[in-house]
Amino acid sequence: MNIGENIFNLRKFKGMSQEELAHKLLVSRQTISLWETNQTLPTIDNFLRLKEIFGVSVDRILSAEESKNTHTNSNSLETICAALAYAMGINPPGCAAEKNSELANYIDKKFDGEKADRIVMYNPDAIAQWVYKKYPEYFCDVKRQTDVEIYLSAVMPSVTPVCFGTMYTGAQPKVHGIQKYEKPVITIESIFDALIAAGKKPALVSYGTSSLSRIFLERDMDYYQFEDGGISVVNAKAMELILRDEHDFIVIYNGNYDSVMHKNGPESARSLAELRVNDHIFSCISEMIKMHWKNHNTLVGFAMDHGCHEIDGGCGSHGLDMPEDMNIVHLYKGYSREKV
Image 1 (cartoon, rainbow, N blue to C red):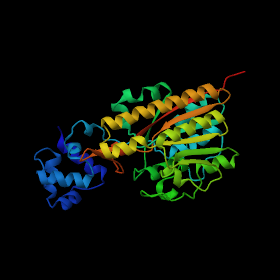
Image 2: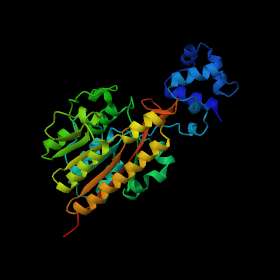
Image 3: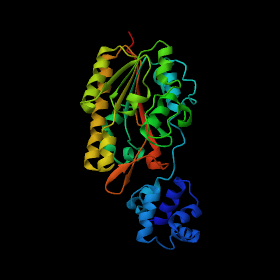
Image 4: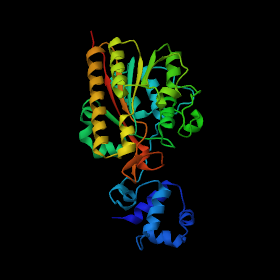
């Protein structure tokens, strides 16, 4: 158990100096230094204050195992938007960052220099990289149905509307305009606008109250937003759209893991069961695409927005600048059209 290292890392994640942390705790800077070098331990009262300041559970401060994950991925979520535009051979949104080279190289190789004419983005909410790594048995079908893992860093604050705003504009929060948990309509150019300008037909399938159902409204595209029925109606509609084969770009939002995780913690039995649901649904969507879109070059993505961490009371949360919340992994698969 390396409590000192955990305190040091959490302080760094919060961007605080030893002096600033000492001021909040009403202790000396030397006291913080003694804790971080494992020469003394905080009192119980100070442990409770530390968990409030850092926004984590006491177990997170005590756990040596979790302290191993101290680095944030170098590639940003903002690089995905331009890579998706590149996959379809269209101009990226005007504020989009440079395309993700790993995804672009995969597309070139998979489609032998051609472009995709269909993209399906399956967006689960709050599935962290550490969850994906720690529980591989809950992602068996996702791994089987994909070729490439792309490790990314979310943006701050690591909450859903901010991160999806970046994923589909390619812009940092201060540029696309959402910098906290709110759901205004984004007015800068998005991947959906770029698709429409290129004569493509996008569709967004989601819950009526979700961030994705709100922040990209007011575009000339198809919205399927359901107030009742949960992910079952969302996924049923998505599969119907695949069968109809009328859309070039389909985004599917499933927030089931996020909802359960907040109430029960990221590693609870109920939360892990929701991972299995996502795994199964993604597999079904992939199988339908293989069966019914044989005449298309199709890119399919299993693409998270941000991660999560455990807090006191057995609950889960996110929104902090720490690897548990920031590190995510996207998985992609390209299906080449059958040659006649």
